[in-house]
Each structure stands twice: as structure tokens, then as C-alpha cells.
Amino acid sequence: MTCEWLLDCTLAHIPSYFSYAHNSRLLSEKLARNPFKPAEKFIKWVEFAAEYSDLNELNLPYHEWSFFTYYSLDAILFTLAGLAVVAASILLTLRTLVSMALAVSCQTDQGSGVGRGDGYGLKKLKSS
Image (tube, rainbow, N blue to C red; front, side, top):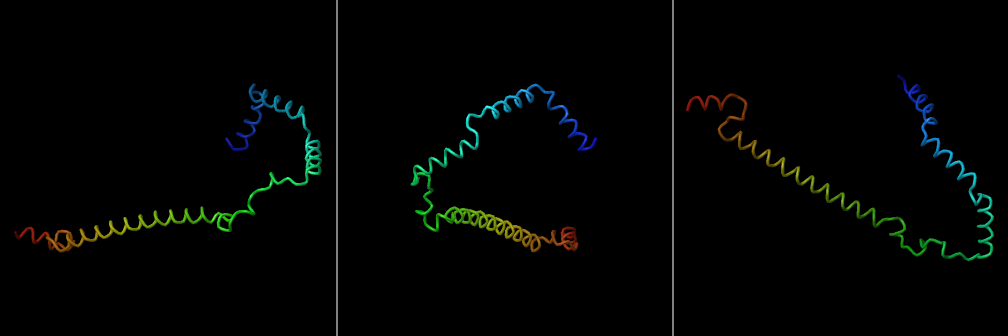
């Protein structure tokens, strides 16, 4: 069972499903009976633009924006600040965990000698 075979079978069965066939016929009819053809829309917009040459309501207000807002620096800096806070909290947590692990390890090594791995702690425990 290869991908080509699966694709061929799927494409062969799609027209036999009623919903796909119905929806494709419906979409075909809608496109054929579109009340405004693309050429007609284009001509109407050109006539509209020629009649009303000053269309300020269609202009975007980007010329009123500051450099900071135009290049989305406010959003970028806010995101970077949030990432910095998250990274700092992760680093502080890791540093605290490592220092606690080292402190426990050092206490184990200096204590009864059990955690040293050289057998000293076992001798000490046997002798007592």
C-alpha cells in the first residue's frame, strides 16, 4: 500500500460521495451566476476613483504613527522583556537547585563518610 495508490483511491472515491458532488455543483453554479464579473468590478472601481479622486477614508493612518509604533518596536520590546523575565527566573531556579544539591553533596561527604565511595564510611560504621 503506497502513497500513490492511497491518493488514487481517495481521488477516485470523492465524486461518488453525495455531499462532495452536491457541494461542487453548488459552488460551480454560484461562480457561473456571479452577479459581478471581475472586469465589471474593475471598471466600477476605476470610475469611482476617477469621480472621487480624494479618497482619504481609504488611506491608512501610518503616516501619523511614530517610528516606535510603525516598526512594532513596542510589541517587540515587550516580548523581549517578558522572555528576559522568564529566562532570569529559570536561571535563578536552576542556580538555587544546583547550589542546594552541592550543599547536600558536601554535607554527605564531610559527615559520616557514607557518600564518599572509598569504603571509608563502611569501615567507620563497622568499627562503631
